[in-house]
Length: 252
View (spheres, rainbow, N blue to C red):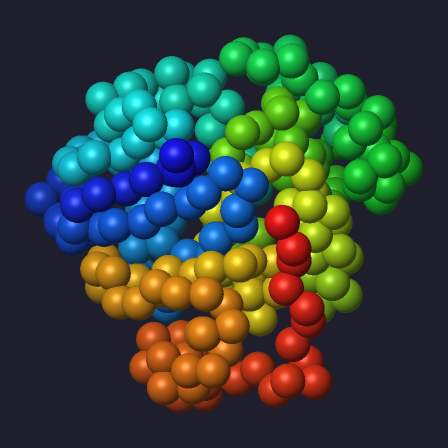
């Protein structure tokens, strides 16, 4: 049974029709990338899963049960956690207080120890008493992921985790996420940094203008320069993956 399954999902903001009959499936302990250009509908897909889109239609199943009519809190309590692109942390609270608040609001599962978060994100260990607003973009992103992780998610949704980060921070974040996804957690990730997403994932979906455009394995996608050019090129430059730069796939 799939952990997550979307069938014929449509989503709307007011009178604007954003998603058109989206199909998507994520198996337990699998890491799947959702790819596409800016405005393709990636974030709206994640928000449809978490129930924060004002209007959605179709079928969304989590562990075989429909959640399309569930509230945001009900979905969250089923251990579906979103790390948004906006890095929603509490700027006037310390790193420690941010983690404590996330831990104390955890429902549906036993939270993970805060000290474990500092082991996973050692950079945060030195910043325990720093307010969120005083952290760099990379530190805020790590805190945002740690806040979701401390709630012991069954399904982790990552929305553009490398957006606005310096390359050296992206490398650090990728190393940490590789450790996280090797654990018993299912992940759906959206990314503009295609190579970053594919390094972490086993399968990928591409959406274009709110519609499914392609799905397949990472190995298949890396051999399809035509797809990279058509759907994932930025500013006229396509993303390619020379064999020497391609990392081994994660094993399950």
